[in-house]
Length: 153
Image 1: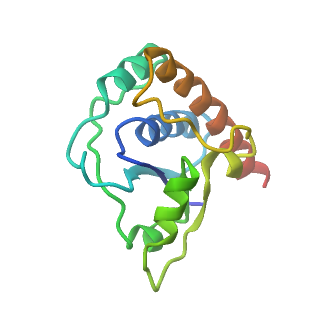
Image 2: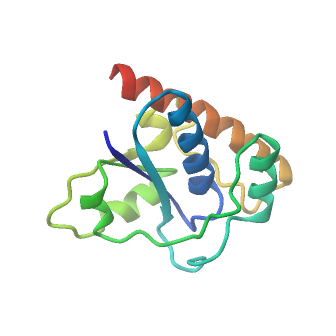
């Protein structure tokens, strides 16, 4: 596994958080894996991460300040080995992309990391501040599972 792409709806909350946690923890684990994130929608393209997510991530030691949202492209399915989506709606949208040379395995992040339930990573965007803190804890649990699976299958 060389390249992993994390995908959520707008690429301003869940996927940039998981990208930051994964980057940090993969380095600590000594695994040489490149990670990135994007969204299925384009309405936040070019924007930074949600300020509430930035604050919750910073409190836990993860920096999202350099993040710039982008929309997934069909080529992402041939440039990455693994595309992990945050929920079943994202999975449906990614599955609709037409890429003749796709090589990426596509799956639900928490399911692939073998840490579900929940199967879907809840989107904190429309909720209270506590949802962002809970998202950090879930991202950490999911990334720990991801690392176990990358190491041991």
